Image 1 (cartoon, helix red, strand yellow):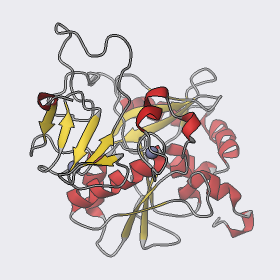
Image 2: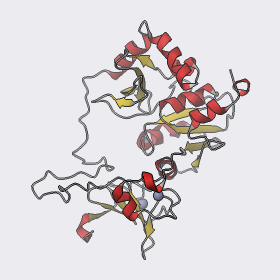
Image 3: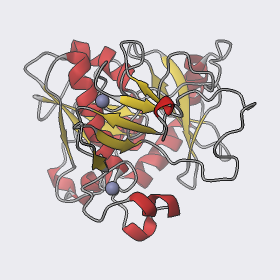
Length: 314
Ligand SMILES: [Zn+2]
Ligand SMILES: [Zn+2]
């Protein structure tokens, strides 16, 4: 790619991989990064000691490269000044929508049903504010900012698919009253992916916050986790979602190395955990750990469901 297609990072536009304000460059479309700090998850290294990360797929359709008169493309992972984000909707009261759903007549039965499906406690779902929107719209998982205010809703349909409500923002899934409390393993705070994993760790009696996806929510987490005492260990939990070479897309196959130990293409769960941990470490000025769920479970919920019931904390 020509030199003018790379933008040096700065204080206003930090590196999406390491959060640094120097030593890294981002492609103008935000799809790739030469990061000067983080090797983990990169696909090659240059002579200058920078590591090449692919953040998302390039559009291989004939419209790429974009035409001159196309509107300017905002780097997707750089929030500042970007023009392609969904407008925030101040008119929608997400807190009220979530409250109505969680307190409606069918809500308790719906939480019981979902608890059975996921193998978690209905009480964990209640504490997260999970509600019921009806058979066609499914369960509502409220997503919050760092103050606990609800800023968006992620729906879970009966077939297990997830849909984020339009106009809302992707936020964190947690119980604002008790997220720092922990019945067992009180030295840890776990950061998992998604609402059902959050419910799984809550069921275990652990201190947990759910991230909106593998790499998202860093800004909100940095704000929320300032309250965590330094003697506690913050652990970003990754997912065992590694893909085989055959499962990669055609364009990924052209650059993917067989020796890869986990990049954004072949192992999003690991890549997201590593980069989230390093970004939080920079933001919070403390060590942040990352780990996989024990015993090769795909995610925290799979691990919970593999445990004998009598070992669970009730
Ligand atoms: Zn970097
Ligand atoms: Zn890879």
